Image 1 (tube, helix red, strand yellow):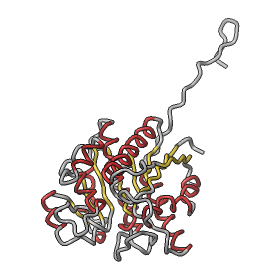
Image 2 (cartoon, rainbow, N blue to C red):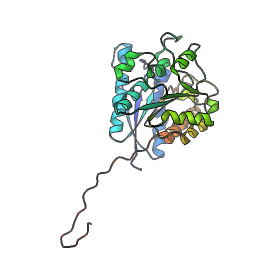
Image 3 (cartoon, rainbow, N blue to C red):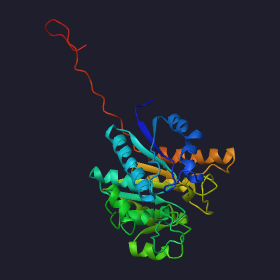
Image 4 (cartoon, rainbow, N blue to C red):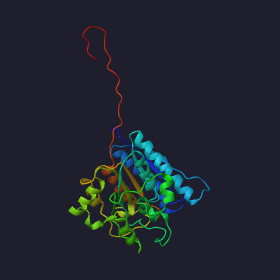
Length: 302
């Protein structure tokens, strides 16, 4: 082992529910050997689970989870561990951003997702809060959640969306109003794309949010809402050439309920390779004992 530690925060909820396929997906990734893959790559891995209060309202449940995530990320960073959040959905991002901002970081988010997550209550066909997560981070909706966890709206140029291809009809207007940079999967690696990514993260703490359905289903099929023609894993890994190591990562929207063993293995491999590529490796400080001296004149430290 090389002394570098990764703290996995498991959040087995889909918005406020614990009984959906994607809610179960957070634990499912670990059950299919994800932590062992990270250990094989040289990380020491710890895990902790964040639970919601029983019989609470939807708002209180989601706030409790967000605050638990924020506290868990802060604890991990304070002890020199890298925080990796496994969540049923994208609302976990609110807790991560709140924590990074509390550490006086100017935060930039690279958001990988097949879906826009830029709905608001006025534009959402379903009212599904998880589909509003990025809009909430930008200050466009759900202020009770963002303010309740202590997250400030991200700057207009501090978020970029990668690999989106399943936007709801009215989301495009929200994206335009928010000034959100959106990069299709097919443009990864282009010069203009690379420059956009560099500008977004320059001088900021870089947070990588990965809704795993943003990855092409051929590379990561074990997701709740697969969408064809996603970003190839190789192209996403290639972004590491222009992006710095991340300060925190989330992986969300996994589902192992209907996948084969081979599909599960492919998905675990894709997730592990992304984390190994982007996670910032920080060696905890080692406190050295003062050198011992032997008796006698001119003795050297032993």
